[in-house]
Image (cartoon, rainbow, N blue to C red; front, side, top):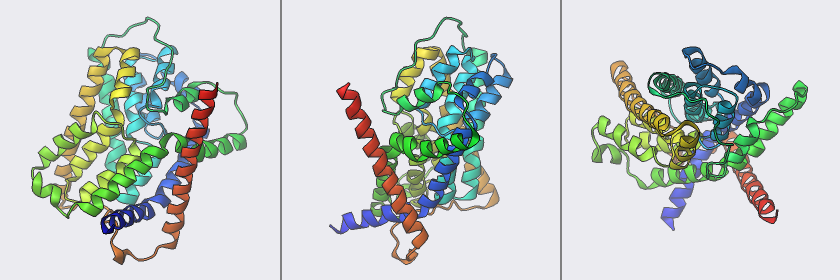
Length: 357
């Protein structure tokens, strides 16, 4: 029983620390959704050149879509004539970053990591797009109609890819906020809850510096977390508390960054569907670029920390009683949990309606 209490305390401490920033991030995600309609994103991209790759990467960085939800948008981009390079760039930058995950990074980790995460996501997306242009094989044949990727959040991405009539600014902002605190939580609630629960388990049960003692080499830490993150599904925001706890337990900041890059952008379900739209050769280029960039970025970030004499910081010593009572954090954490529960309710409700029809 004491172990369960320790885990609950650790999870709650993480939620209190992260929830205010995450709620702000979700709100900003809704504003981005309102002001940057996905139909415009489709029209914004075009020929297989550096300009389209740069635009795709830049547009994808702030967008609040996970690696599964972005797949139907990738199909929409291809149907509208976007190049494979632009699509690959967009599909990497979108799930690796986002205003919500950047906010969570700032809440749970330090400023260098917060800055590095979107920059490296952008650079990885650009390199993947360029690699596709150089080594890929552009095809003009029709691509399959969009389909879900099997993780349960593709439906939202497909709906987002459709063009909607232009509404007034007020209506779009209201719709964006409803999207952020409704549909986004419907898609992500289960992963957010699992991510925080796993982070709580790690924080409560793993002794300080345990990981560093068992896997002392920072380079091996990077490789291990890339191998761990690549095949599993973990959205960018839910991966953040896990990475923060690992840093608190002794993992190098570079290894944490590698996990934050490899995990959200790759998972078996999305890769299988993506191969249908871009082809196996393009997916191989996509995956190889992500892995190489995650390893390279991890090594570079460790070198930056070492060169500047910085110590990686993570607000994830969760569960420590001396943290005291934080009314604002407690209210935000309670609101965050209620939104997650509402998201699960909406997911079950919609699934039941689909089964009835």
